[in-house]
Image (cartoon, rainbow, N blue to C red; front, side, top):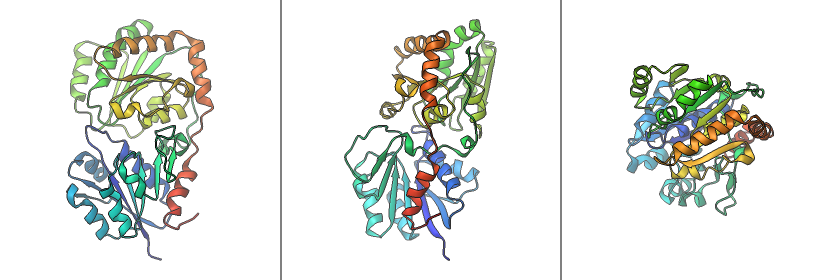
Length: 335
């Protein structure tokens, strides 16, 4: 039987980060037992995404943006999965004209009305009124490394904190966060785990700052393939407002979330009802004070931290079958 062709169109650069690439990799793992031929495509404004996929030894082509739809249609796929943020009509409609099924992820653009399905896992509540959109963390697909990990037990005392801001951290919020909390952590004997992504360009500067200031009790890791082990070593976390929030929630780790840009502010899973503290978009003057107050509250107020922890315990991310079924149904494949 001829394999059905699925093409993932993804983006990944220093501005948007690499979450779209990693989501594609997660879906790829879930589809490995189906009769699918899976390829990736990106455009020449997303070289970082291309490089990451090549390192994974995956089939990936790179196209000019103006020709990318034409190049997709030429391959006659059965399904196209767009993980490119907001789509336009020109991103989706030509595919439908050629009888190609389309799924979009994290999409609030004009192309959604032409897609067969839109999965907006990072938006907890419906923002738009379309029948082809599903919303919220019930459709979040965690990476494979989280599948068989037991959540953390509640620690009576905070002994460690994780700082991580995605694949690129274009504003170097990692370094700024470290500077804001280091003196307190040093006095309180709190170990700091820092994990930076493969697209983080200021890693050497961060490394040199830590050495120059002779900072102690810090673990600095760059471009790990298994971030879960650093999460499990940490009692609380400070992170950006993307998929990492779901991963930390899955492990029952209370988090302080700093959005890197305006779009991340709309990812409204991050709120105290879900055991997460959001202090808004990064701001040069406001963030330091807000972060320090939220951080010391988490460390010092055990009852407050326990309250967040118990809310996290109620949230489940056993969504793999649900998401895979949605994808496979559009290719008329069932398991």
